[in-house]
Image 1 (tube, rainbow, N blue to C red):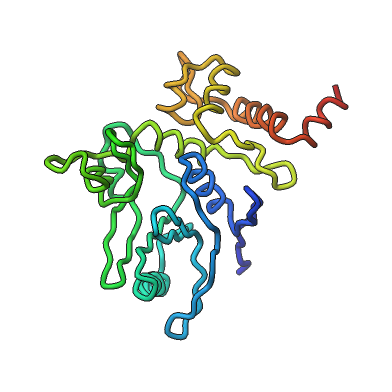
Image 2 (cartoon, rainbow, N blue to C red):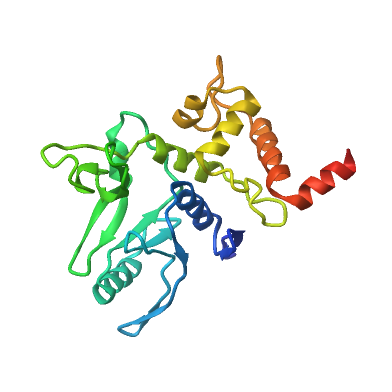
Length: 246
């Protein structure tokens, strides 16, 4: 059987081993979360391990998997958590898109390892009051800070998180492995998209792909058109080639 290898992707100065890892990097950039890719490798009880992301401000490790982690992968994550005394989160599958009111999304969260045990169904969330962002069980934002100590608050589908998920899912990495989407991974760039297509900004935050009146989803041609539009803005080489052709 022919082995299937993920496509390496260059983004933000890193050569990621897969597009999925690069998309998560877009997610972090959109939220302003600092990250280091493959910061360092470890020898853990005779097993070598190179974690994907280290998030220094959150003091956690992030592992990205295309499929559910194997028992061996879970074991290594547990060892990493044990010896570094830092939590290890494994996100598996494609970039999700949290619905507005469907709490079943929380069941697909990350597996987390503490060193002395583990848990599942942990999701990114944001406190609606102080806007701190982190990962908590079921996206319960009240656990992030002291703003809501007497009640449960779910923050897994805040506008900022929806924007970040959208940016990660829609990121393009064409044009010699440059990110054609460039720096269009934040709210300001989504505003530009809103003007370019004449789409209300809130629709871009609420839906993905693009939303237009009388039609729910954008066509692939529209997505390609906007991706190319962004590449002309962010990539001097592409812009020069475009102007030469024009």
